[in-house]
Image 1 (cartoon, rainbow, N blue to C red):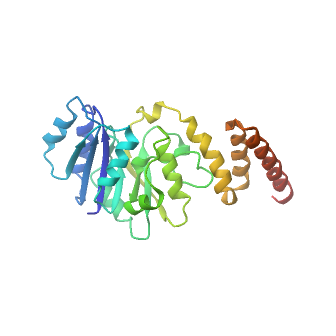
Image 2: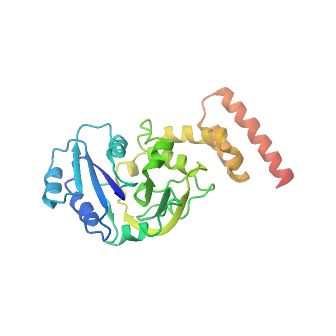
Image 3: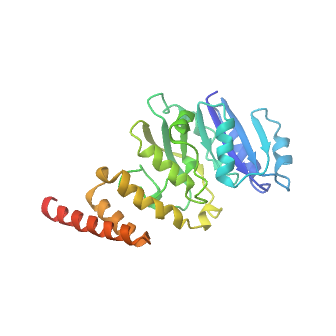
Length: 258
């Protein structure tokens, strides 16, 4: 099977049908849809059943939230590629999957494009070492299932930033080849859970991780920016002193050699 599309749901009766109709109407039909439902009490499951499509598989059980549901979907998926979409999102046209898989070859492990939304421009375009602070929507990303064998699943310690955390792991892994497609993939509905929450804990980990594990590959101005941010995010006197010394050294290096 080419593709597993994973949709976490919980009381999603308002928009789930629109989401699923955008999927089952695709010109590429080699996929399964895994509904990872958190025991909805509304008409979500009934509406899904009305579509009567054998490619849709429903699993309804208690979960620990959106990312826990997505992790369960990863375990059950049979597809070579995985794609995650929210129940309030939808694919933009019936040829999206055909267009994506005309470019998603064995040369790449992750391919990604764009979403239609009011997201900042900083969350758009090709991801680079200069824009790592700004995540790319998982509604625009297709992952080979083998990627999760290498980097693991969504970290549940981050209630909002788990997809950002996971995306950084594949992007910064030299063994995982990615390609930016530039295609409009889906409509991403802002205003959901992740749009209305701030995950300070994610950035408390982000800046130290960039400094400890990826500092050498960062552009000099990004090095300075991340050390400055790490100083603001630490409560450790030892780390504070360490970062201040590092910041002084990087600024001197920039002044002398850049």
